[in-house]
Image (tube, rainbow, N blue to C red; front, side, top):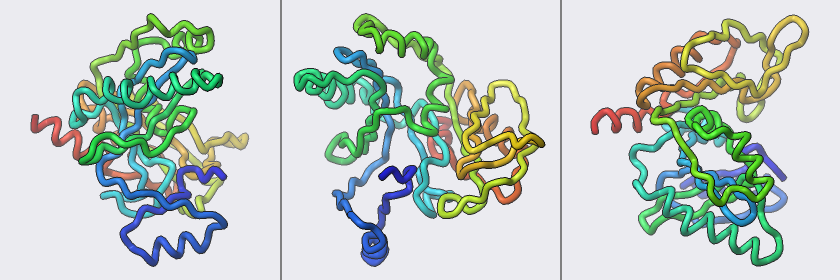
Length: 269
């Protein structure tokens, strides 16, 4: 069943893989794909599909991609290091053929198609498909989208995307996730959340939170997603981290390296 992004073990350690397999009723073994992972979404009306700009998320719980797999500890967009034709190539090689094939089978797909990609030495490979927006990639993408999302979804539902063109802001966005103590293995709930700031060009998305009548408390593993928006990744990162550092939740943590390498490379260029 669904495991919230935490049911997969990627390891070079044979014993670790074996231990995970023994703990499961069923096991799927897949080829290891070496290369950066990218999330690219498409919105389809059943006949046409619009490819959105790519994002990259960070699955491991700790800095430097250490620790357990999670549902995602942060994301950013755009990707200055990605091939310039990644959107066009993914549309031609992945998204459009998928929509055409489903249509040909009499099961047209309407909605959001999420392609999880690996950019390998042998070209782009599809790791997975989902039929939903990705979390936390969506929190980095939607603030950059100039075309109203509601308009796109309505046109998808009414077979009206054929002549639609997506418009994007020239800004960058970086999303950092605040996680509860113990996440992802055994997250603690009930901790009091305070000092949630209001900062220009920062959006805070609630996930594992609830108001218990006395205030805001944590109710899940990934508690808040903080998105900073800026003219480049460095500015977006600064805003996201300045905001998340002010939030108080005992035992909570977040990664300090979301989009760090990409922002450094972007400045170098």
